[in-house]
Image (cartoon, rainbow, N blue to C red; front, side, top):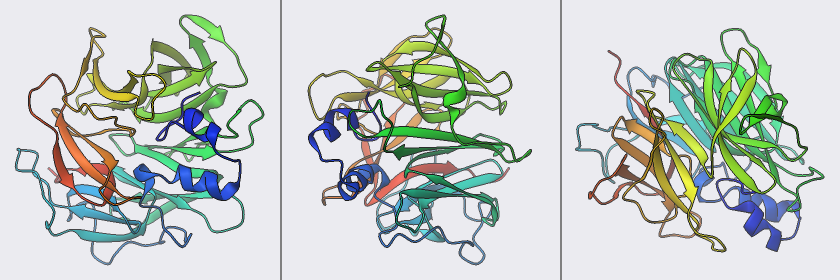
Amino acid sequence: MTLPPLSLRARITALTAATAVLAAVAVGYTVAAADGDGRAPAATAAPGLTLDNAPGLYHASRGGTALSTPYSPSGTGTADGARSRSTGLSCGRFHASGRSAVCIAHHPGLSQKTKVTVLDRALDTRRTVVVGGIPNRARVSPSGRMVAWTLFVSGDSYASSSFSTRSGILDTRTGYLIKNVETLQLYLEGRRYHAPDVNYWGITFADDDNRFYATVATKGRTYLVEGDVKTWKARTLRRNAECPSLSPDGTRIAFKKRVRQGTEDPWRLHVLDLRTMRETPVAETRSVDDQAAWLDNSTLAYALPGRTKGTSDIWTVPAGASAIAPSLLLSDASSPSMVPAAE
C-alpha cells in the first residue's frame, strides 16, 4: 500500500523496522517542521496574535514554529523576506479554517504518540487529544467545526513494511471523537467491502461539515472516497488518487496521482472536476508528495524538498491546465494553510 507523504510501502520496505529509522522517514520534508526536541505543542500562542488580526499564509517553519506570512491572493503573493509573525506553537502540521485551527506534534515519551491541539480563532487551546503515531496530515473544515488528522503507525500485522496510517476526526461542536475512521462502512466500486488492510489518510471536508473526501488503500491500490459523517459510510469515486484537497468553492479536488511505477518520484498533481469527473494535470511536473492546499479557487500550494537536506519549500501553481510555471513561495517552510482576512 502506498502511504503519504513518502512512498512508504515502496521505500520503507528497504529499511529496517527500527523505531528511530521509521521516525526519521516519517518526519520527512512534508513534516520537516516537527519539533526537534520532542516537545508537545505550546499550550498558548504568542501574545496578541490571532487568526483575525494576522490573516495570511500560515505554515510550519523548519524549527517547528507555526508562522503567519502576509499573502495576497490577487497574484502578488509573498516572497522570502516577507515579515512573518510567530504563533508560538510548535507543530509538525498546522491547519486553520473558519473558527478553528489544529496543531499536531510529537508527544514526549518513549512510545510514538502525537498530541492534537485544537485551537479557537484567538489560538487559545480548546481541546487536546493524545493518540498513537507520528504526525502526518491535518485539516479543519471550512466552518472550523470538524478537525481531522492522519498519523503513521507501526505494528499492524498486515503491513509488510511495519507501517500504516491511522486517521481521526473530532467534532468540536459536540465533542464527539473518532480515533480511527477505519470503522467506516466502505463501498468499493459499488459493493460493500471488508478487509483487514484498509487504511485511510488525507481527509478533506466539504462546507456542510458532513461530507468529506479521503484516500483509502487496500490490496495495493488507492482510491478516492467520498464519506458521510452522519451515516458513517464511504464510497469510492475513482482509483489512483491520493491526498485529496477540496477547493474553497467545493467543485474540484486536487490530488496526487501515481503516473510512474518503480521510481522514487512517482506522483503528479492533478485536479478533478467533481461534476464531470474529468481530471487535469497541473503545470508542476515534479513529483509532489504532499496534500496540496488551496490558497484560493485558482491557486494550489504544496511542499517540495528544499535545497538543504531535510528541509522543504512551499511552491504554488495554477489549479488546472495552465502554461504558467510553478513559483517558489517560501523557503524552509511546509504545511501551508490560507487564512483570509475577516469579512
